[in-house]
Image (cartoon, rainbow, N blue to C red):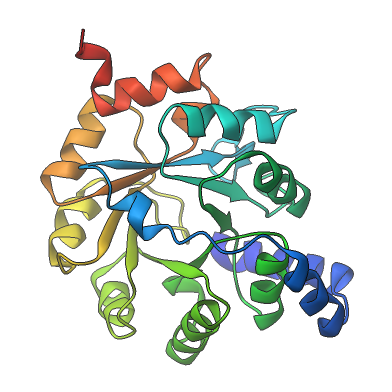
Length: 260
């Protein structure tokens, strides 16, 4: 069993334990804040930052305690992040829907629910908790699921960050014409990182699509490499949560610390 398969099994178990009647979730959706479309924010600068609230990962283990997820997100927003990514998977990443609620209550920019979306219920749940964007991992979904979930997300007013790791996955992603495609340099089946994924895949993404470089980005040089291959946004978690000053770390990644 791959790491991805193991994670998804846990996600399904946890979902079964917390699932509520859909009618109740739909009532909660009606009370949720209006959707904030991320595209204008993601397209507002040459390189946008999706800053992540992330306590741990399967590859690195514990990263940061993050007692105040909303406070961290507020620091990200004040530092110029275009989007806040909130991990809600508990077993491997230490996240929760409570983190999503806390962040939504504090920041005014769009929020990505970062989780392994494998069931229709999760999309209604995401919207009920204030998510504006959801993650669709191509490697975790059949083509029919990818298409149906993308349509469901957009039908609920949200956008989808469609994540790919290989050429075949990118071809599948392009079939559904998403507005945002992320190239993850970490293979979720093996946890290996290969930054050459950026060079191989990002140039093949159409120019009218937001092109996000994900994983393995910890230095200014990493950002420059991704940008030289066509990335218009970066998704960064570990480098920010491990920094003593997340705002300064973000500025350093963007090269803004060099300005007087």
